[in-house]
Image 1: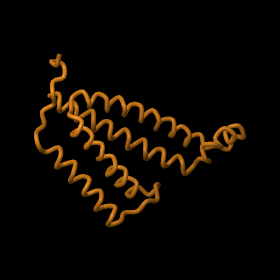
Image 2: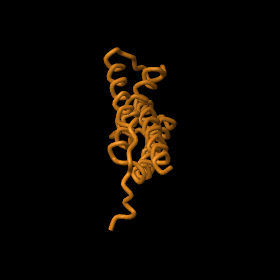
Image 3: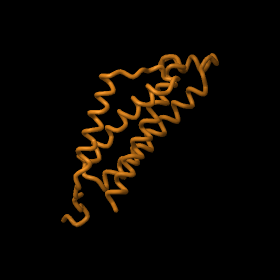
Length: 137
């Protein structure tokens, strides 16, 4: 049961970090360079919705880290860390699929994503035993 919970937390971390990456990408195409934010705010020429998405993405990163810490409690590091690779595939697929990101599919990128996913599947199809650290001296 604890491995299932760990996988759930790891996948929650993946979803949060993927959403954060997409949100930041969308925002940064609508905002000035970060060093110009204060002057843009004072002049009223900043897109407040894009700035709100940046703040939300930062919060998503923080929640992602909490999920990651919970996942590490129940999963061996090698298995948990491989699950993070799913975010690479998810971000690529969503960025290339959704027109607002203006990204494109390519054979080489898609092949790379397929190989990453094959690695994740390979690592996670064999049963793994998490050491019970609570019984250690």
